[in-house]
Length: 502
Image (cartoon, rainbow, N blue to C red):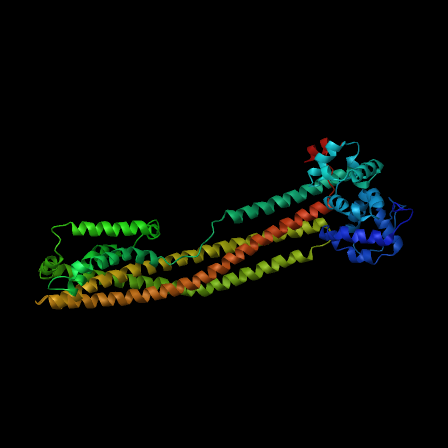
């Protein structure tokens, strides 16, 4: 029986050590602590020594009264491996931190025999055990214990082969888990759509600032403030042509700095001041009194009204469909979350048998993979709907700007010109007001839809993060299980056989 290094077995100290070791061990062994606490002294001491279950093959074994025999068999093998070192070190706390490292990494003690300090250092360092910096008295005790260890069950050739076969199962599952994790990480993050209308407004800001800086010059003359209105209108006329559908990448050109913006304004002002032919007042008078200009304005206004009506119809139809999908998206997301939580909860009731646990984890991985594929499809659908709504909002914003520009021209023409063309400028202004009304409705509707979709997208992205976190958790569970259950042999006489097997 154990002598504890002091001539007798100190059960209290031994129990404290065992509970400390198991509390930092794999969950399969950690769950056995209540049964071990309930053991009588004789049962506990046999456990401490690693005495196997009594059987025809082991008639000198011990008859443990436990519920979970399979994990206890594994634990008894682990105690058998560490028996000699436990027997000498359990009574003194100075050995605890070194023993915990060896125990947690499940180092095969017998396999360390006949190795010098350099080889021991290299081998143990591969398992993050800093043997090099151990105190000399600890090293000396450890080397003596190594050479006193013999006939451990895990060092038997048949046992080594069984362990390596089981380790390959762990590695296969870990490979699958890591591959799925890499798949999630490789997927581009579906970012929340920003308000691209701001980009359009920033482009418009250039011309507003230009008008403000030229205000004194444009407000001079007999037409006064009306020249300023007319000047603003004439500057914005080129934007009318931009009210056709535009590409997303044009809207997302954010490389126009504030310095470049200010420089462009100053350059344009300088160019204006240096132009001898610049006479806005004369240009306005000639333009608005021209029948050709009036015809062009009215034609352009009605063309713009027709385009606006077509866009309003298309946006109403498409946005209505997207609005109906919002409820469907919410329901899909809730179903995915519910199923994922059900699958995740299965991990909390893993059996004590490691092979069964691996099967359950692999099944859960398949189920979570299905959850993720459904979630990915949902995120893509949401993103596509946001893109469509965003395009309508941007086009309507440009349409609203165009309607405003044309409306200003119509008002200016109606006020400044005293001829029969005045009524046509009024009609053009009214058509542009109708266009502006339609664009405003589309902007409001699309903005509300985008906000709702962004909310669902945020929750979907959060669910994606939870799936990734769960995969990381499964990887940790498998690694901890392998680390605590399977002994590490390092270099030994079975290496050639193991390599062929793998």
